[in-house]
Structure formats: C-alpha cells, structure tokens
Amino acid sequence: MRQLEKGQSLLVATHNRGKLEEIAALLKPYGVAVSGAADHALSEPDETETTFVGNARIKAHAAARATGLPALADDSGLEIDALDGAPGVYTADWAETGSGRDFSMAMGRVHDALVARGASQPWTARFRCTLVLAWPDGHDAVFPGVIEGRIVWPMRGEGGHGYDPIFQADGYDVTFGEMDRWEKNRISHRADALNRFTQACLD
Image 1 (cartoon, helix red, strand yellow):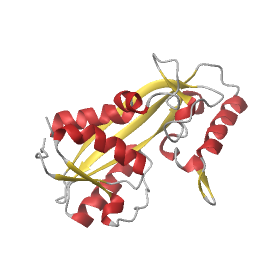
Image 2 (cartoon, rainbow, N blue to C red):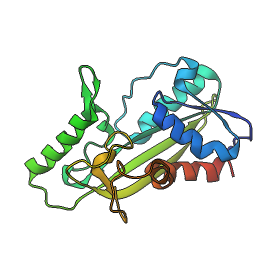
Image 3 (cartoon, rainbow, N blue to C red):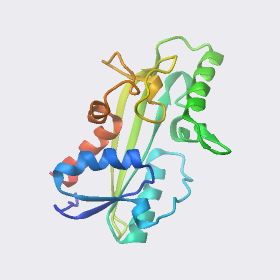
Image 4 (cartoon, one colour):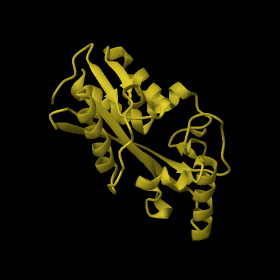
C-alpha cells in the first residue's frame, strides 16, 4: 500500500466544513497537512455513479488531477433495511429543495416512508462511508466503514449534521444528534473508514 509521509499535504475533496474538520481532527496526530476543496477553489464534480465507491472515486480523482496532490474523498449515506436500503447513495438527494438542502424535511421523509410501508420496529439501519485515496498518477485505494444502528422518531438532539438526530447506534441510548461531537467522531462510520486508511497509509 502506498504511504503518505509525515508533513505531506493531503487534499480532502469536500466543501463540507464539518466533514473537513472531522477528518482533519482524526488525522492531526499523524502530522499530515490537510486542506479542503474550497482552499483550492475546486468545483464539485457530478456524482453520476450508483455506488458509494463509484462516487468517491469521481471526487478523489478529479481533485488529485486538478491539484497534483493526493486526494481523499468520501461518499457516505444512510441505509434503512425496511426501505430496501434507501436512501443509500441518494441520502443527500433526499434533502434537496429549490433553495438548498433541508435535512429536517429529509428526516420527515424517512419517517413518512417507514410509516407508509407499515414497517415494524426496530427500524434497523446503518451509516456507510467509503473513502477513496487517489494519487495524481491515477492510483487509488478504497477504505470502507460502517456503523450499525436504528432509526428513531421523533428527532432527538441538536448536534451533528444530516440525519444524525434520527440515528441511534447499537449499544447507545442517545442519537448521533444528542451525542458529544468527539464521541460520535470516535465511533462513526467515517472513523471506521479513516482507521482503515490510517493503518494502511500512515502507521
């Protein structure tokens, strides 16, 4: 596995400041200099694939080609068993409105879909994250992460982002929205994927 050296620059191909801060905090002990897509004035490429790994590859390779830096991109989403794995790769799309993303609306949409199906509880679900590290020469490596849990209703908590207020991880009695930010970052699907990445490329 190709290694990142201490002090090397790594581009995290996201415009999401919360996601960038989360990844930068997890990588801080390794001495990697992290920057985001906005720092390089990168536009967001169209995510035209139907899998998490496909969309992560699009973002990582586009950023690596544009900057000449190794680029780390993730695609992540929520899979709900009673909805046949939806929203899945379309997790962010469920929040789209004419004036931006509304995740309160998206969480309501999830609940309405579960009720419409007559799905019995517990509403088992998982967050998945797929990280792709791409190099300017076209080489890449894939690191998957997952955390199992269930959907709860009503929404609980003001923390986190996205669907966090309706996701309760197995073994916990609070939602991601109620959980301390750093505790969530320690156990999340992204932390799982990043742990695989650091073990392979940084340790």
